[in-house]
Length: 398
Ligand SMILES: Cc1ncc(COP(=O)(O)O)c(C=O)c1O
Image (cartoon, rainbow, N blue to C red):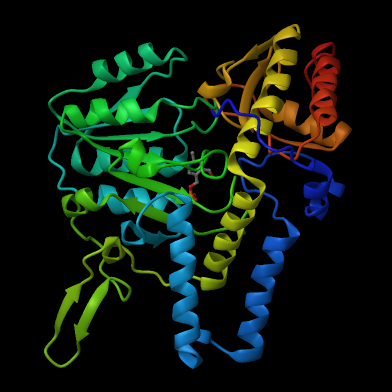
């Protein structure tokens, strides 16, 4: 995190962009975000344009293809990558599947994933295990960075083909030291895939600098674009490692209908097949510009402030165990906790019914809450959540 103080954010002005905030207190941004008026408005304007003018790429191709080029340029700049390293996808699941299906698996090959992966990585990995008899190795999550790196060393073997990790893990909110983890994996000859669902939009991301071979990106959590679009980042020098499993009408450089011959694109676009809703993707670029205007270091510092406030209060509550690392640079905008005696579902239900707070229950390996902290939350909303948990903690579990 940058140590220089960022310009203060006018939280109340930002909140006016989110009419949905009048209806509840919003701690579930890590699921699907609420969308600000300026981004939803751009999406609506593009859909209206479709109504008024027809399908733009058919009728006004020069205009629409230029707009697509500039949208992709904008998204590429946001992630500090070359547009030729991006393929449009519907989300992280599709990006990850494109990588998995592009490799030639042999029985006994190994994939390392973390102990806290969302379905987008977990399910395709388990499915691959059952289809190709590969071995899945789970990386334990540790808050001390040197221990985390040592744990990866312990998981790697001569059979490891791929290390697939979330930058910020989905339920427990660990921010992994990906730069070093990718280096260690590379030294052992393994490819790396990083899921940036919970980091894109929260701080500056430099994917080439991180050193991963591939990344899965989505639009609809911390980037505040409407649900749903995504990207596969494929590092220029790693693209040749993947075969193309799904060639489609968006993968080609040329297609000769007479001779039945084709040439695939020589950029990451050869991995894409679509089609997609371009208004969604254009709106995503508008969201990237909106975030940049606010400033990613401003967002990062405000998120750290809110998360630290919440963690400090949770740690003082009887019966509460904090599941997310305390340090701001080992976590991001997700804070998970358990409350003794309570299931996640009953906690979330009580919070919604009695205090109109929307929070994700943790119903799987842990029972508790995953509290999402978008940068425009108020300090008082955090204090109210803690006050509500204090009341629940004094009551018999419902
Ligand atoms: C870490 C993580 N990755 C990916 C996703 C979703 O991926 P997709 O858009 O492919 O469903 C989520 C949550 O929805 C998530 O928490």
